Image (cartoon, rainbow, N blue to C red; front, top):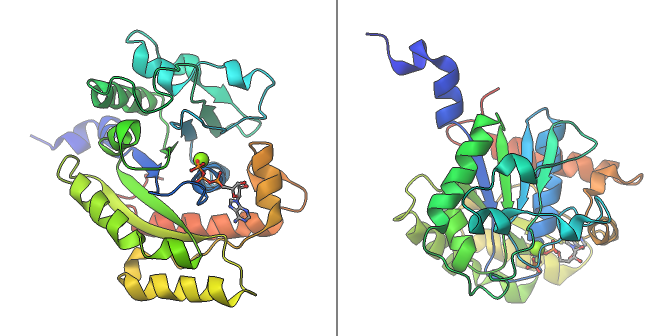
Length: 275
Ligand SMILES: Nc1ncnc2c1ncn2[C@@H]1O[C@H](COP(=O)(O)OP(=O)(O)OP(=O)(O)O)[C@@H](O)[C@H]1O
Ligand SMILES: [Mg+2]
């Protein structure tokens, strides 16, 4: 008998190879949301059908999409409501390959106090539904820390990336963070630790450059992305509007940086995202 892959190529393709990336960090304010939005935009621009999901109850992904975005149902409503479908939550953008799911309304989770039992199962359901909708890539922006819903998201993700601000105080905590993520592989052996991305790098500041070097010294070479995200006020302007910076008139340079990061990531993601 021919193997399943040959008999049902589409089934195999979609069933096995959906790429779900969680963007996590121990610390807050390191650039998770900025990375999530801009990386998702880079995947979408490359032609991948991409879904950006806000799993941070304080989240601001897509804040500016519509005036009503704060009232949209989203990820937390899906966790709470067993009959809700992902299709009801999807917010399209001007780029046909790029859609969003907002964090939603459910306040029970706001301080990490919501019921956790059953979340992993429900998030697995979320992933199967987007798989059926033929998304290629799903990026989960998460709240800081590795507990609660973020841990549940990691329990079903195929990869995780860690942004790290290029400043002296933050760098030392990164190896511990990676150890914690490695322990999560006991729960989810398919979780690929894709590496750390240096963010807010300020080339003209010696402390910033030294921190970047220190991190590269602390970790195995392959654990730190070659691409670094420079500090640039455009990110603040774009994130205040919940937008990818590349849609702004002055954003061409940042588009190139995130495209480079996407290409670097695509070389690491295993199994590769289908083309
Ligand atoms: N490369 C950058 N250059 C300048 N400012 C940046 C850069 N990346 C992010 N910022 C700004 O830093 C702040 C924190 O970034 P962001 O919201 O992405 O972090 P976060 O890790 O998602 O935070 P939280 O843990 O609160 O969710 C925001 O005001 C954002 O605009
Ligand atoms: Mg955030």
